[in-house]
Length: 435
Ligand code: UGA
Image (cartoon, rainbow, N blue to C red; front, side, top):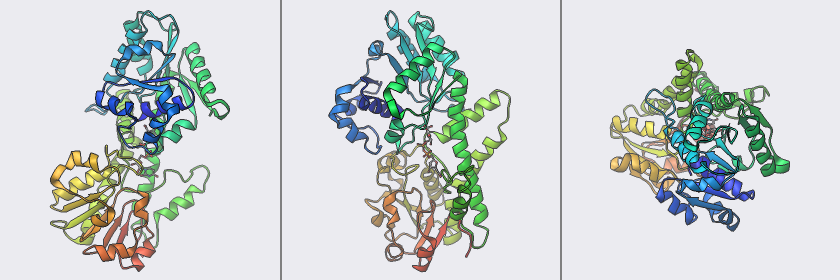
């Protein structure tokens, strides 16, 4: 019942399916039964409390309940090992519980793997593990690879209106069964469904995230060139190239680098898989390297504007890896704060949702403001790290009146540079050339 599992469960319950959400974490289950989401996602708690959802969605730690279902989605986490490869232990344990629960049942059950996994996992891990634990042979049950593409912060909408559905299986019965299910669920709104092999489906998921991460690292590279080019601005360049239909404007927002629970982990997973299979993925490694360097930009800009950071008071606006989430996993803000502390700066932070999660990491080593205004008060420099909507309304006057020195680094291109500079702010932004 993490982000993928819970959102899928809610979306399917709303579409009329009876859903059992299985998890091993008793605390999460207790919260979920009360209608409280264990993490922040827009509308998630509201959806959980709706009678139409409550009627069709139950939560349990009893994986034997699985035997009653027609389809089981595996939505467990696949964290990175030291060498970057995906750890499949959770997938294996899920496959064992599924196998044990379907031993002896008479009806056909389909198992769909939504977790992001190494190519070959459905065929070489999930299928044989279920066969062993259930005493059944494939075709008495089915296995499909069915990757998920929902984004945190927009997860419910993405689950309700997916761009496409990928069904990977060499077993025609299983693929047809899952396709029929999705056509029933989405009816007239069924998106394109692509059927392919297990491995293609698994690689589509990795390649999808790798392409998006590449697009961002590309525009961040152009941003660095723009910063050295008088009168240039990466936002305008992104708008210009984005008009080319072959390129498109989405995922061309320059910033302090990509983070989160997916891109970094999946890039490591794909690179590790590629190397292990004999190909050195030079492009993907450069994408990651570009991103690592991008995370250092905030500190470099702050140092160039303030001289030294020692004992300077730095306000950080935004901690989450992007807006509309409380997730700080591999968030750029974490790297920036660690760098600031190492240089002896005093750090005060504000995030509308992610403060609690950041507190688990930094505890008392930084200060936590109750709002954006308190965060800015008497600061020597403000670094905008996450593009929360509520930061857009900050005016040049807020910075000049509240801060000791109004030095602002816009890491997400949220503010109008002209307005800030004309309003007396010492302003620097990613991808903004000298004027
Ligand atoms: C990503 C994919 O977009 C989803 O399709 C996929 O299902 C998910 O990973 C996953 O594998 O589970 P997510 O990590 O929730 O979704 O967030 P994104 O919206 O993709 O943003 C990732 C990072 O890229 C964030 O740090 C964001 O700030 C950054 N980003 C995004 C940019 O710096 N510039 C952009 O133009 C877009």
